[in-house]
Length: 441
Image (cartoon, rainbow, N blue to C red; front, side):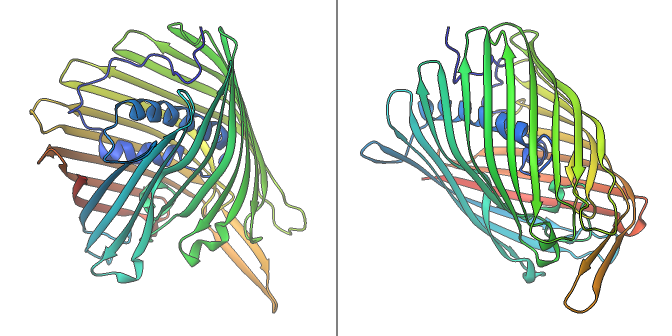
């Protein structure tokens, strides 16, 4: 039986009025975003698989509000208003601010055949700081993608271009003391899957670029070549084991940080315990080999392990929850790399009719080594030193949504974050209250 285009049967879904916790969604986006990690090729592949299944279901169920022949569009407008007591994520001399984020989302598809379609989604917006207008920016929302799925017998090919433009420092635990971190992320590539009935083989290649939104982080601008291979056995059985491998070539535009070759490999397993409970686990070996050619300073290579565990459980028609654990390595912000271990937990409460309530929590430990770099200048040299750092972060979010009209949805969320570091100047505490409105035309 051909299962291409289908993921293993998920746990029974919660009712539609159970919202995804805002913090958990943000944490997930951060975890699977294009960071150039040793497992980025794998994460991009998994994200694409999940996105492809979501697109397929959305295409089947979506009520498009504009049709031009066979081309279908769905337009929606958003407005976010955030009040925060620490817009710059600093320990002292904090700055309160009110941030406005209007946006427009366009999603669509063009069916080429019964199975093949070109899909796309674009979200554009603007963020306006009332007290710190130097941080005003145009935004391209995460998850934006243009893609084409092609099915040929037992093969599925997907050609894609995924891009986003974000400036949220909360997405990376190593960052503090700045109001914006991030920029343009773009990965274009191709993924192929071969269905052998009891085994599905997958391979992928992507070319990624990362361009900083802030001149102070322009030394992080880079390109990455991403390769991934995986095999999943018994895809239709309750227990489905697999194996996965990745490889990345990371190249910086400027010589402040080291170029690197990174790779990882290890086993994975998906287990559908019941229609209400499922888990997915992976673990393995990860390595970074930093290029020190022509440098007077050195960077320690990485030879370590990664792991991930995701468990989701539908308790009843009113309550569902999920927990995830992850340990891994990323290309550094202030050093060659940083390591993080994180636990995230989210609960969806459908107790109040038409007003879904969501709570989520995150705990993160991280560390980055001391770093020193010498960059040649036309006159002299620039020497940069960074202290070794270990940090912990705690976060919690409570959000509630409400369907105001058939086309207008609103939500209110409160977020709290606390970061403690052995480098005292990099601590911060933040409280934020956000009101969001979404109108579907």
